[in-house]
Amino acid sequence: MHARERADDVLRMYRLARSGGSRELLHWVSGRAAGWAGLLDGDGTVLHGVTRSPDGTGVGAAALAGEYARGLSKLDARSFAFDRGPHTALLFPLDGPPDAPAPILAVVAPRPLPDGLAILLSDVTMPLAMCWAAEAVERKRRRVDLAESRSREAVLHLLMTGQLSIAHQVAGALRPTLPDPVRVYVVECPVGRRDEVARICTELSGGRSWIVRCPVYARHLILVVPADADAAEQRLGLRVAEVVTECVVGVSEDLPLPDTATGYRQAFHALAVARGLPDRHACFGSAPDPAVAAGADGVRWADELLHPLLTYLPRRSQDPGSQELAATLASWLAFSSHATQHLKIHRNTLAARLRLIGELLGLDLNRVGDQAALDLALRIRATPTGHEKARREEKAAQPSLALDDILRVPAVREWAVQQLRPLTGPDAPRSAADPQDTLRTWLRCEAQLTPTAEALDISVPGVRKRLTRLESVLGRSLLQAPSARYDLWLAFRSLDVTGAGAAGPR
Image (cartoon, rainbow, N blue to C red; front, side):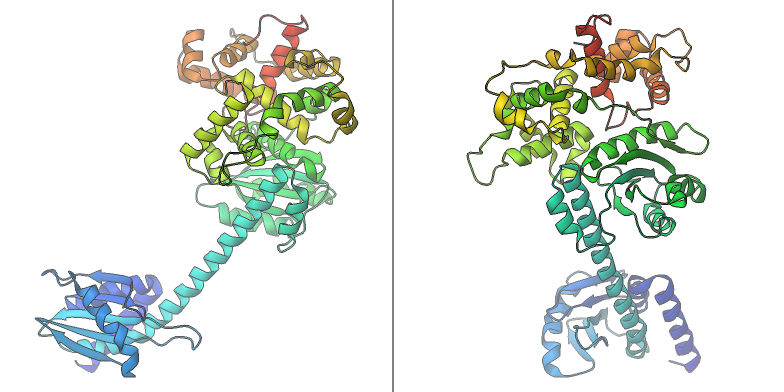
């Protein structure tokens, strides 16, 4: 090999190392050898392998190289060559850090070997070792990032399910500390830029935000921000939308840390409104919570409804218990089929748990009405109401309550009126279609678009368009989970049972 050719090869190696890493280098080496090239660890396992041989040299080449790589460490040699049949195998251990085993470069090529191949392989070991070391560091960084992301996701899940003590324990190993009170943001990012937007949010919030990559929606970031932030930090959502022009941001009210789940729902509903605004940012409008309005009777009703679930004992120790089933139900009510991503379970596992929950409670989980009742009951139990005494002393003394009894409570009726007021107020949509009729029909059809379109005698895109307009009017998400369909069903039902509305969804 001439010096000029060798210099060109070395220059080519370093360019490939910079642009494509170890895979591109191996691809190039395989082509120069007209055979198989790969990296193996000390026990002969192939880490990367490439073949560009026209005669099928790669078939069995990895096994052949691995057989000799296992004995290379015993030979105390810097290189090794052996012949078998019509092929020659060349092995070169790469340099690596003293505390970690370095891989072995192996090439299997047909004889006669190309001119200067051994020199080329000795030259490529340096850039290949550098690439491997850099890639090893990157792999470790990704594992650390993934572990931290999963830990933050776990903390958020604990907050959502009201397990504050465990959430604080897990969060203690991360930064920043969990704030209290909080304001929750949901940031919808451009495709493929969530990590970049997360870094921007960290910088704009001065590192005070608890940032979680949403496990359900691949474009969403969830930010838990201190509610006592200064004026600049209170504009965090607007600043994010300004810096990243394709971002959309929804913001909750200021809430205690135990109400993080409520804050997330509020921010998600605000996000649906923000999509239609010029500045792509919206805050959730102040509204009462039916879980609070239900009062002591609501607490007792929720306890009675959920009692079979909360006292369930599985037959086998490996089966989900009452707490896991309740968490599954809450996740499914919030995220529908996306609960599999939230809970990290298979869809068949989710379906089996939901069947069991329906059997325990005697409810049809395919009906929006039963879903709305369960959602309200879980929210009541998660809301600090100060009615623990009612739970302990009055449950046995009072007659059983039905959902309609709770919906007749004056405070709940007032909540229902406020929920539906945007449909009849000055900002209500001006069209031939009655928005209340559209929503009632949609709810009667179990929030399914195709049956709704048939009942309204319009197209499915027409139904979707109407509901999208109503999202802006109500300031709530309808088509994406978490959806406001449960609150709307409860609101319509409350007005119906108190005689203030027409026949509601049943």
